Image (cartoon, rainbow, N blue to C red):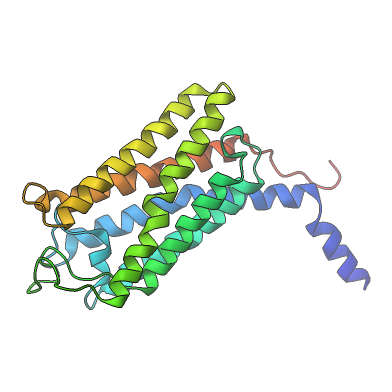
Length: 238
């Protein structure tokens, strides 16, 4: 019993709580760079895959699909951890409950994207038509899982932007709002490309990558900012 009480006391000290907050925020910092690096490298070496034309999710198809599926799962887990860190942090930009909740929902969407594989589109894998006549159940579930990612992150950025603006931190407020608008606009162009719009079909992958890098980069910036403002862990004797 004495040992248990000692463990509980240690886990409840302010220094331990601050250390955990900083660890969780580091996960938020890493989420975007890890996810982007993996899909850029995998897309660059995959036979028949054209990064400017094909969506990131198509990398989950084929014999090497487990790499991108794992990338979705890892990124989603890092998103969830980062959201928990932001909820515990004292940064004014993330002081509302909405932003961490929306970021957490995006993390859940990424994990679901690992479970439900997208349908072939724009001729990938090689030999497949540009568009299927009817989507599969897994493809529908995958598209639904993308909603909290491509809608939730911009909403979180707008919420943080408003909070930052009200707190007098107008630079980060404008950056957050600009990230939200850019992510939404580029994803709309990507959706048109994947829908086989003649002028955009060969650029769908490019626009989607621009949307992902913008939104995930914003999460990295937000987490790094909160980490910078987070108090360092202290020992019980301090």
